[in-house]
Length: 258
Image 1 (cartoon, rainbow, N blue to C red):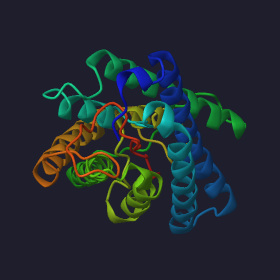
Image 2: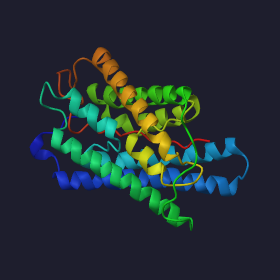
Image 3: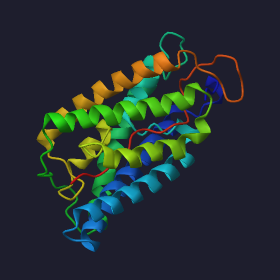
């Protein structure tokens, strides 16, 4: 949904919401991955199920709590698409705000990984050795990210932002299992997960390929939004409205992989 500029919280408060939300998200992803391995050692399928259920539940709550403050983007591709789709109308996230959002998301993701490691008595930072570099994994990231962007902005443009917690979490849960990459779909959280040598980690050398695939998926998803939802509509109205600034929808969750 669109919120008048005067009604939006100050940028500093919105940035704090993005930092906090992304940090909590990574803590849930990494922490539940560590717990899953400890509770179900050697059973990768069960570990992924446990990790995915915790992530989906945590994401839905984070979106519900923080969407009224910042839109709960939690993801650089969501912020970038919000900015890009609103450039012509001037209703999208301003460029400066988008840059601040992205910086806050990356810092939050790094902090979330550190906190999760420390909660389980592991070194604060350990570079992951889990290589995830292959064309089929990149394709999985394209599909996961395109789907995420479509869900987020289809809801916003059709005036159904209230469905975001359930719908975004639902897509994330499905993409955990339906994509070869287990749907990281988030550049900031991909960076954060490179700092944990656990079940949810990704080798630093694999990060550029994943981020590039996520960017391609964001472009594809934005194109689908423009074709399927060429005019945005406000909540409860048949009149066109802008999608930008407060999408009341969340960014991507980075599900854990095996």
